[in-house]
Image (cartoon, rainbow, N blue to C red; front, side, top):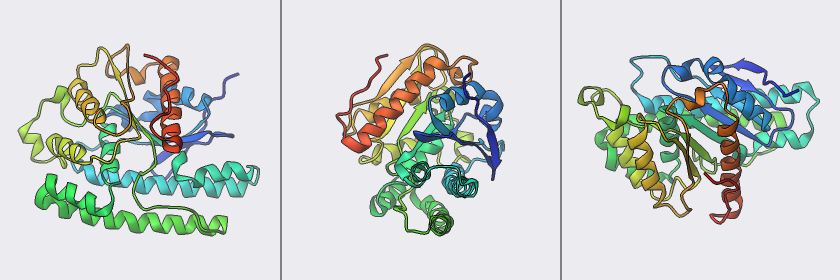
Length: 308
């Protein structure tokens, strides 16, 4: 019988701990559907669990006035470390997990990001913040202007929260762990039907007054982050009119990075990841994540074991 993930509510998220994980998938979904992820993405999570992943599920904030996407993105990183700490505590308390399994949760590169639709924007923002400090500041100032100061204070606050969590983890395992405070550096990302602007790429001047960063600012920062997005891949869908322009933008940008473009276009539409039968999609997700992992360890020559 196929294993069914048992989700535990931890902090503001959900966690399903695999008994022998080959990695940890961190998922953030679309607007509305991502606010109730355990219900709407149930099939996707079950298939991912059966592939061997522990799953961290972040809830998309169901707040119509939540236009500060920077705060939301940075809060995801803080939440990641809360969940890491909670899972490591549980494993140690249970006392039944081999030491090598515990090590998987301590290694930053065992964590993958998987986003759908607007959830992908938050992952892209975390990637932008993974620039070296001087380059990050240049990109933010160039694309955000004076609004850069708003982000800087959030970065400082997040760094404090994360360093506290790292210290607690080190106390639990009774040793220092390797950690670089560079946001999601060395964590591969797979974007499903990524959306970073408004529907079908239509910019709404009224919304742009409130959304921070808006679509134009986000595209500027991605374009300027020339050394990043080397561990990013795209899965798009042939009948998707909502994310079409943003998918094209990402494909264009990833073509300019040092690693060959890793993109698959599958049958379906924008909400395909919500389907009750996801085995074909998850086969691609699994193989793409494996390829990104190989790129991290071996460089850009790692081959993709699937064809579209």
